View 1 (cartoon, rainbow, N blue to C red):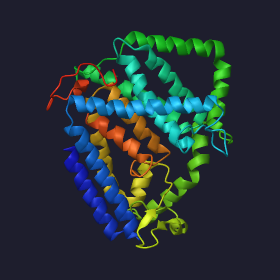
View 2 (view 1 turned 45 degrees about the vertical axis):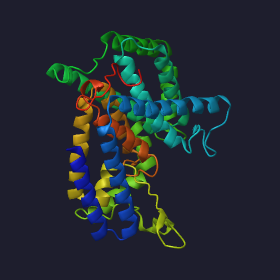
View 3 (view 1 turned 180 degrees about the vertical axis):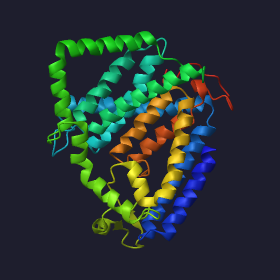
Length: 363
């Protein structure tokens, strides 16, 4: 189902690039790259047996944790900060890349801390490292996606329990939720003013916005205006897949000097739902949202751990529309989203299991 839908959606995007895009080669190459990566990841995760899947998962999420440890080391040494701001970039190229990556890692660790029995203590410490890096990176979308993903995943877990669905999945340990709630309550009681000041400064990040909404409009307001104007002018056809919202930026496309093939055509879109409607038109956007809905349902099937990872990864796209950009940060998003969507109930590959491996991922 997922693989067939992905192929059909990819074919539609490729045809759309041929017919609609004013820069056909750029749109075509971007559409082909996205479809090839998406189909490869879905097939790769889906066709792995239990031992292969466990090893691949450890490499992906263990690698993210190593990035966190190395980035924290650069922070302790006073290095690894952006040259024009106080945001920590660590061992990556930008703070806005490090923050969402650590949000995904923190989402995984948070869900595991709520469900694993017994709970290895190092996971709690690593969760603290990831949250600290999100704060040091000043990536507001990292914190928003982490908190939003956890809330959505907890609500979905509650609905699954009430409906008695997917009983093989690990359940949340109620005492840990109460303990975490009590700890946050005590922190608010004894250091509420200080915490509020830290949060306010984190939201403002040198700007004038006093709330998340104000900060979002200050940071992405101009981009949203461009998106809305293009949707209004091209509601059915869109402007072309992977094309910059502002025609004045088209000259920035870098091409190979010998063959004229585009090598770099970066765009900054901001809000992913609007970006899809702007580039592909509303009809194709509806098909894309249906595909994303199918991914969501498949991720929920695997329990709270993969669903938390999925929701955190997708929520990063409300400020950085990277899902359709596998040439950059979007590769990480696609990697963990397809992992989540192909995780079977209970975290055990039932259909083609060669070696039964008990316990959750990264145990």
